[in-house]
Length: 331
Image (cartoon, rainbow, N blue to C red; front, side, top):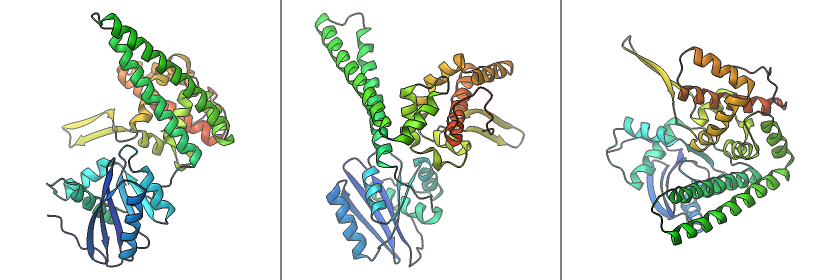
């Protein structure tokens, strides 16, 4: 059983979001109110009426960063003057474990999120500008198309695929190719409409290993480089921070990354890192140092991904195109 004492003047809203619905737990005036709503404009309006009924004119709402199901609700709450936090699910899971919660239902999850929000006071979320939000949707859509195309291409490699099916798959792949080509053009045209996005894309493309599509993915997934005070914060957001484990003198390991971050951003950096290791002088020098230290190929690629992100942060922050002798803070 979850037990907590809530300040009478606190209005906190925990939200467990799903594709078609969401559960909330409102902590206000010493009360615990649980409700279920449709994940739709009508459900948002009903949530507002619930808040008004309990005189919760301004709440601190919190939800997990799971897919894009909660984006519309988060923006709605923000536009209505509420403080919104979108947090890594791992933080909520760790908090639930600390509370020794053994029950997992949508209502219980909403209550745990509300308690987490009340006690931990996570940072406020700020919605990206509309043009950046649209760019994110475009790059995620093209990424989904590329994955689907590859799945169909893999089916053609089977030795016993009947000819009618082979012909059908070939036609489908052609459609994917046409759509991907059209979307790449649409993404470039979208970026070119906005001077800051265009300038940032050009700066990113100045880094050997980063092309137009990768630049668009970075701008779409990072949303705004200016939100990060330093490169370390951005690396942590991507889940590329190295993890150290130590216990007395018997255990001390460091060699893997946290992965508690944006998986799409890590994926967007993987292939460019392989290219940059061949073409980018800074990453070539990095590779030589790591090889001399006996690092594995995987460790070198991860280090290259991290360095590419540092370089991207550097050119955006400085407004200066990439130079091989560009001086950056260590990250």
